[in-house]
Amino acid sequence: MTWLDVVFSVLYVIVLCALVIHFIASIPVGRFKKKWILKQWPEHDEPHPPPLPKFIHFVHLASMIVLGFTGMYIHFPSAVFAREIMRNIHYVAMIIVTLTLFWRFWYAFASKRRDWRAFAITKRDVKSLFGVAAYYAFISNKKPHTDKYNVMQKGTYLVFAMFMLLQAFCGFSLITDRNFIIPLINMSPSALLLGWWLAPITGDLPSAVMWMRVLHYFLTWMFIVLTTIHVYLSATEDIPVTLDFFGLGSHEEHDAGGHGDAHEPAPEPAAAE
Image (cartoon, rainbow, N blue to C red; front, side, top):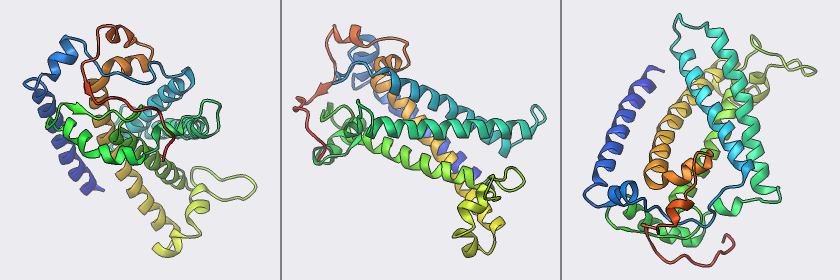
């Protein structure tokens, strides 16, 4: 998988450079002054997220960081920690991430405060796509305001959700009979998940596991790249809400001074189309 390391290392450097350039470009157009000096941040339909999704997000984020660190350590081991210890920590974090992922799905679709509509892409979102892209590219100073999240945020969250499901499948499929045997059925997770479809295609189970390992590592790099972009935009576009989400502050004090983003008038809330 050396080629993945080369490709994504170069891509990551390019992304970092692009983000630095993007941040510097915010100075001459006045956004840096507006947000970081005048403290004028965008207005939101929901000032404070409920406690439960904040807790789930925090646990999920912490576990993802552990997964990323331990996963890279397993791929590039050193003498600091035993590889088997890091692998066990990786497995524990993997279980926690999977549980919190499905917990968040339950909250979004089945709880009393289900919020799946906040992430659903509507026709109005699609129409606003070029406007949102133009705003992020500094072509326009107007950021279309259609819902709690704009269309690019919604798309990113949906991609994250799909990648997490696929990553979870890959992760469990890498657990072979050397690591764990499922009671009652006397099969390893890899045999259960891959033995009936991918193993016949690739020739045998070890080959199927190898391909899952490549996909798992590819997704790990994708998470690193996308998370870096996500953190950058969260900090530069709405740091008060980001801090508030983790209980480190509130953006209400910024709201009192007015909102600096040139939003289009917000429409009445509507059900997802």
